[in-house]
Picture 1 (tube, rainbow, N blue to C red):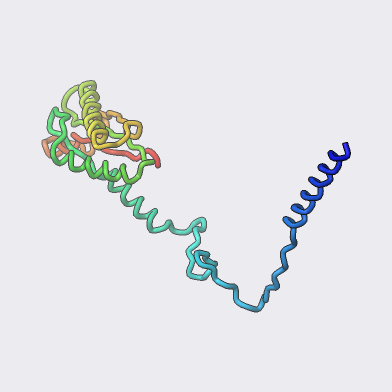
Picture 2 (cartoon, rainbow, N blue to C red):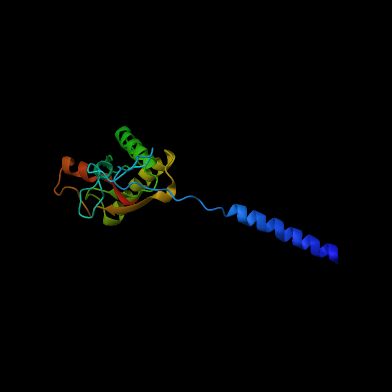
Length: 183
């Protein structure tokens, strides 16, 4: 029993020594408040040439560039031949550019909108518009875009780009457009 008391006492003494040595007080550094602050590598200070993102201020140039890219993405349409939904060489080129943009911005989702000219029945044009949107969607997926990022809708003849008759007007209405849904 006496040995047990010595062991407990010895453990308490060793613990006390470690506790005291681990809690050594650090010296207080004197700071000369009149001296200029020292620059540390990798640390920035609030200098007058710094740009702060304040509410109501202009967006940064990278945000402006992204907005410009997004606007171009939505402006570039693909066009189809009469009563067709297969992709032309020009349409494939535009879709390749769109896939490149989407690969660079993996959080952006898009909707492909299929359109037709006003010839044919409403039902036929809605179905043809859906096939046009689907062919564009399928090509984007073929180019490596995640299918969850691309949805489709058909407007048929309901949202013409131009009104009137004649091949020049009809050709502009046989199209697929692209809308960015979010990023």
